[in-house]
Length: 544
Image (cartoon, rainbow, N blue to C red):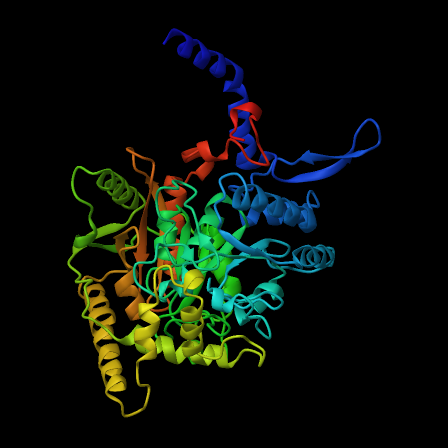
C-alpha cells in the first residue's frame, strides 16, 4: 500500500500542472493558430486566444472582420479539432463526413469579406449540417448503408441559403438512421453507416436522436454552429442531452426540400448551437419560403432577423404556463435545477402560472403513412443514377445486406411500405382521421390552455414539449439549465409557443440564458476524455 501511495504521489506531482494546462488547451486556446516566423525564419503555428469549444458567431465574426484570423485558418483549425475529437482521442464520431471543398469555400469567404458593404455574421463561419440534408458534391446518406453513394443533384434550399450568407459547409453530422424511423429500439445516434455517436458529456449516456451528431458537434465545438432536423424530439432531445441550445421551428418556417423526410406534417430543420444568439443567427439564415414546399407559403417571418429579438428584458411581463406534469419529482437533482430555473424566470420579471396540459396522445398512423409517401417523393427527385428509387428498394437492399444493415431490424420501414396510399384506401382514411386527432390532441389543447390563462409561452423540463409540439407544428426552444450534482449530467428547460412565435421564444430564452449563464463545455464538466488527444497529450500517462 505504501508503494502504491508513493507512486500516486509521484504521478500527482509530475502531472498536476500538465493536466491543468492540457484542459486549458483542449478548451481552445491552442485550437486556433496562425503562422509566424521564428528566430530561424521558419514558420511555426502560434495560438490565438479564442476557444473553439465556446466561441460564438459574434466573436468569430469580430475576429474575421478585424483580420486577426482568416476563414481559411479558422476552417483548418476546426478540421484539426474534428480529427482530434471526432476520429481520434475520445472518438465522439459526431461528424460522418468532411466537405472536400471546405477550404475552397473558406478562401471564397475570405475574398468576400475583403469587399465593401454589409455581410452576414455567418460569412466565413464553419457550419455542420445533419447527414439527411443535401449538400452538392457530398452523399446524403441518412446514416444508411443503402444510401452510402446517394448524391443529390444540388444543395437543399437551406444549404443554398447558408452559402448565400457565406457560411462554410465544413461537414455533415452523424445521426440516428433515417432520423430514427427505420425501426424501433435503435439507440440514439446509431446508424448502419455511421456507427454510434458518443455523448461528449458522458459516453455512458445517449447523445439522443436523431440529431445526436449535430448536438455533440455543437457541444464540443466541432463547428461554430450545427443544424439538425426534427419530426418529434430530434432537435429538442439532443439539445438537452448535449447541453446546447436547440430551436425546433414552426413547421413551415424552414424549407424541407432536399432533406430526407419522415413526415411532412411534422418535419422541420433547426439550429443546435452553444448560445441563443448563435441559434438566432442560424435561424435567420435558414428562414425562408420555398415554392417546392407548400408549408412555407404562409410563413409571415420571411426575412426576419432573429438576432434583433435577443433581449435581456424580454421576460418582464411574460406570463409563463408551468405544465404540472413537467415538474420533476421532489428531492431529485432535476427538481433542484428546475426550482432554480423557475426562480430565475421570476427574478427576470416573469409571472408563472400553474396549468394542467394533457400531453398524451392516441395511437397515430401519420408518421407510418407519410414516411413511405414522402421518402419516395424525395428519392424520385434524385439523379437517375441514384442507387435507391423507393422505400421498397431500401428494404430489399437491407434484406440482402442484413449483416451490415439490420442490426436492429427495419420494422417501421416494413410497416410503412405496407400502407396503401390510394385515395380511397382504408389506410388513407385512417391516416386522415389520425391527423385530425393529432391536431385536436396538440394544437387545440395548447391553444385552449394559453387562451384561458392569457399565457405567452409554456414551460417544460428537458424535451418535454417535443411530442405535443411536434403534432401541433409549433415551435420550441431548449436552453441549458445546469448539471445534476450527482453525475454532472445536463438539464435544460424549454419554452413552447404557438405558430410563428419564434421571436418571443428567442427573447425569453436569451433573457434566461444571460441571467443564469449556466452552460459549461464538456471539457469542464467531463475533462477525463480530453486529456489525451492530438491537441493535448500527457505523454506516458496516456494509453498506447
